[in-house]
Image 1 (cartoon, rainbow over the protein chains, first blue to last red):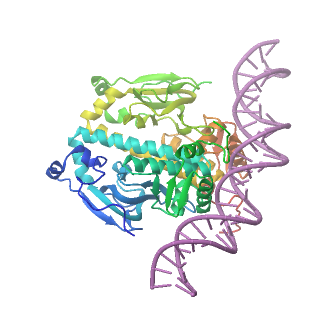
Image 2: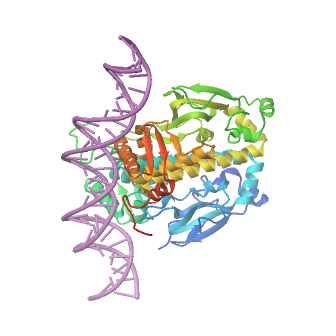
Image 3: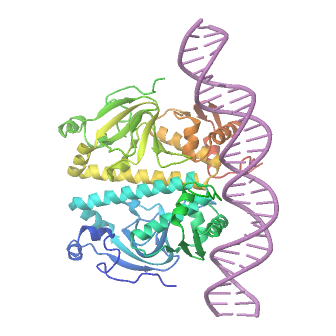
Length: 245
Length: 245
DNA sequence: CGTTGAGTTGATGGAACTCAAATAGCGTGG
DNA sequence: CCACGCTATTTGAGTTCCATCAACTCAACG
């Protein structure tokens, strides 16, 4: 299986506007500062970075999908987050010497790696970089809060609906065309992330499909009635069918 | 009801070493920079700041307890975090113009408020301040991850045990003497935070007390066998009593 | 065509929620 | 100081939701 995206230069990359260094300086300026961005191909299952190891780079996903694992977990879940194209990983590593999470590709992916040293140097000289960084960290914090409330306060159907809406929204931020999602991860990873079991995720998918809100074909999920899906997410009863609203 | 702490100057404050500005500059230097710290008395139930409003200050708890509420919640939980003496709130507000959470005192509290403007000015001139800030934000991120896994991957008994251990650890970081916790918040707030119902929290307390791991008297909880409590937290079976191990 | 692994579906039990009642704290006022 | 009333907390009984275990389907692949 090949990843969706192709290896292109940053200037041609559809993520250009989203790409962190791209917002700060153009290619020639980056060169001048010695900010060498590495592009890497990550096969499925490969670790991008490991918990306990020193993190020497910030990573950005160009294509594919990376899952962030928490290694403290015992019997249950360990997936903290999924990162989709245009999103960053390992932001939390800025404050601590070693990573507390592990990054693993759930499908073949292409990654940009920015050396942390050159990066923080850039932040030291450019206040714009610092501001941008702060903004990104704040956004990551807000996302973490969202996933906390999604998992803590919602029941299984709502979590699955929320997950689909979340992924859909994030992909559309990067100009994904339609309502059809390619979920790179398998059911176990989704269940892990949502604090459920894969059987439950599967049942929720089937139920939503039965109600015609989505169409499911393996890893491809099409959102048919996004408004109704949002109602499920916000706690509408399971089989509620009102005559006219 | 009066809060535990007394209003003292920062220099006499037991939190001096923990207090963020305290780590950066002494009192006279703060004055020179115009970094005027306000001290406020917050009665129980009062909002320190509101979701949707512009945040003009960073807050630190000197005594009492502040809960951070998420207003998006529907029927269920909204408590994102509790802040105990020596801890900061509203860190996430640095990147965004308006707060997305509401801070409410769960008991009468004393607060230090640092004006955000002067604060960021200080960060702009002092790289030590920026580093310290980054460290604090990273710590907040780690704490958020911990509470996510606590709530998602553990069952009720383990969550309650983890909560007690977490609070105990945080209070002891600030030199709390014994194993006796004064929980300022009520059972509903704890349940809300842990993604449970107050009845379940109560049952877990009772069960842990029955097993002699803790003693419960209303809002006072004494940790009797912290090692055993840690085992519960890490997933030891409920009534597991091994003959010899 | 058999194998393999992911995904789906069914049956059952357990953990936590819900509703309801009893009890304990705590402040107030006699 | 004690009785009172209010609220927070605890306890009990029944129900629901999801996990668990197991069987089955389906597609990919040699």
